[in-house]
Length: 165
Image (tube, rainbow, N blue to C red; front, side, top):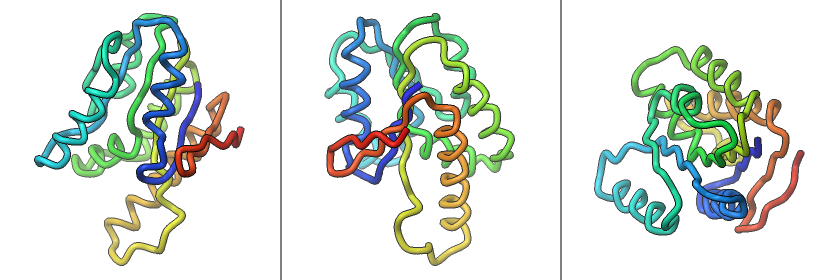
């Protein structure tokens, strides 16, 4: 499992797509985003159009572990992204620690080449409100859990991958 982390617009998704498409298709793209507004619908559309043929898109805004379990062994999988998945669970008022543990457990046993994308949100200023601080802290803990079970960790900076693990 390859964990690809970086800031906004650092090239995470595009690099993950490049890594996945270096392998034979079919490729699975597990999307965690939900389109609540026009701007998000446009972002999702851009991602879909960039991927092209050979990709099967699976929407899994909450049950990411279940979506992974349903895939055949050996299929290249790109999960984009963990911070949106975490946001969905926060908005649903789910037990974040339990959900993160469940996901980390599944990701610790990949059944093929899996590429997992997440945002690094802890390098900026301390947020000015409790909800944003709670999200930043939960994302940091989740990223640490996933990095610990990943075979490879790449940090994306300005479109360039830096191997961390």
